[in-house]
Image (cartoon, rainbow, N blue to C red; front, side, top):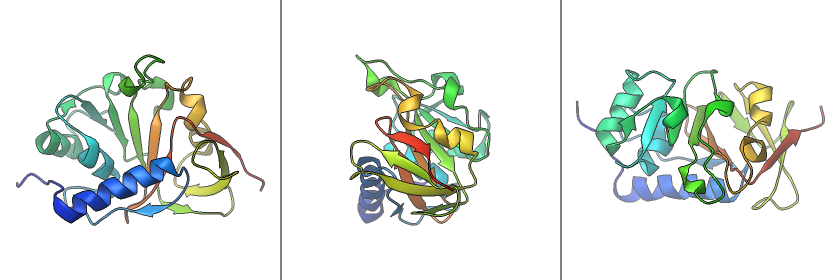
Length: 190
C-alpha cells in the first residue's frame, strides 16, 4: 500500500478550504479530491495538518484503518482520545466533553476535532446560529447526521477561550464547515 500524501495544488487547496472554513465559521467550503481511496474526506483535515509531534485518535480505535493510514502518512502517534491533538469521528460517538481543551497559556494543546456528517447547508430545518469572530452578525448552518446536543456543545462551550476545541464538519463529498473555539452555537428557530 502506497502512503497517501497531499502535495502541490491539492495540498494548497486543502489548506485553503480548511483555514478559510475556520476563519469564516459556518461557511461551507470544498476540499480537493482525496489523494487515495484509503483517505475518506473526514480524514483530510488530519492528513493536511497532522505531523510527527501530534497524537491522533480515530473512533477511539487504535487499529482503525484510517488511524493507521494517518500514522503512516504524517508520523502522528496513535493515542487515546483523552491525549489526542487530532480526534477523528466517522460515527455518531462524538466525545466533545472528553477532549483536550488546552489552557489560556497553551491553547495549541487543544484537540482538533473532525466529524463526518451526512450533509451541510446554509439553512434549513434544524439549523443552528453561529456568532463570534469571523461571522458578520450571525450565520445559520444546517448539519445533518450529527446529534443536535453535540452540535450545540461545539464552539465556546468546549472550553474557556482561548482554550477550547476547533471542529470541522465534513461530508463524504468533501464539503467542509468549521466551528472554532471562539464561536457561539445556539439553537435556531424552527
